[in-house]
Image 1 (cartoon, rainbow, N blue to C red):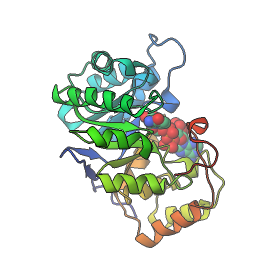
Image 2 (cartoon, rainbow, N blue to C red):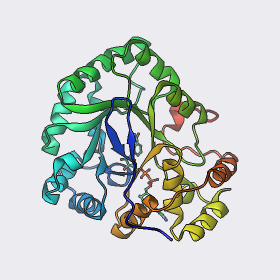
Image 3 (tube, rainbow, N blue to C red):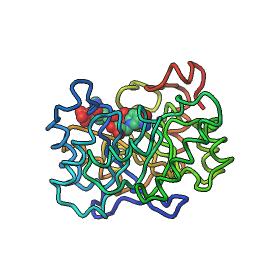
Length: 296
Ligand SMILES: NC(=O)c1ccc[n+]([C@@H]2O[C@H](COP(=O)([O-])OP(=O)(O)OC[C@H]3O[C@@H](n4cnc5c(N)ncnc54)[C@H](OP(=O)(O)O)[C@@H]3O)[C@@H](O)[C@H]2O)c1
């Protein structure tokens, strides 16, 4: 049975900062495709609900066009800024990450973020492009505009040129990660270089990639721990030192996910999910960039 008094764990990053091991995202379901100036009250209300039920790690991005909503929700929640861990990301604004971060901070009504990520590596035509942008990221940290710096959707070949010149190594790489996309080579590379892994789309195996070979294991573990399959998917990340970032428009679900703080999977259970998960491949994002047979 879940013990709800347990707090969510934090993961220590290579720069000494700590990240709460469950994030609430304002992308995917909240992504704004229409008029960016039109405020999405549903998104504001959802982030406020997330903060209310205990999420302190909030994941935004320039490209989601919901930074104003994120900032309004934080302000209206009246929660101490120092108790929150706020991430945002640069993508379209990669030409000038400093101006882009300053605009994001203005939109969020914040003085700094806890983590600033380069959203994707695909802007780069040569290794030096990664190196040039990473030097700008280091300067943003030095200026105190962000506490930590990292990347998202990077592969080892994108990380290597950065590691060659970094004074401050990337703290984290946020990538698609779930039982049907275990990224074993990438995660091993991260471990070798002290880079933390964060998982987006962590619920894929029990949502959009279901049915599949882990269905029965997720169901039996959900029964054993008196939680839902979603919490098993999230805990499967946490117990492998991977920081899941999820989202929901439903307060009950947001609250249920917090129960993943209250139990731990055994190594045998993790192994069983990994072995069954490896029998199917599913990628929801960036299929055209990774190619059909690249599951690393
Ligand atoms: N760096 C990147 O490139 C990148 C890419 C994608 C995402 N992200 C980040 O990660 C966050 C989460 O991504 P995600 O949405 O893909 O993650 P996810 O946690 O795997 O999926 C969350 C979605 O699953 C739905 N869901 C949950 N349980 C369900 C169930 N039992 N049946 C049907 N639907 C269910 C939720 O809908 P309800 O609202 O109905 O609960 C929600 O829309 C994003 O918001 C964003 O911050 C980053």
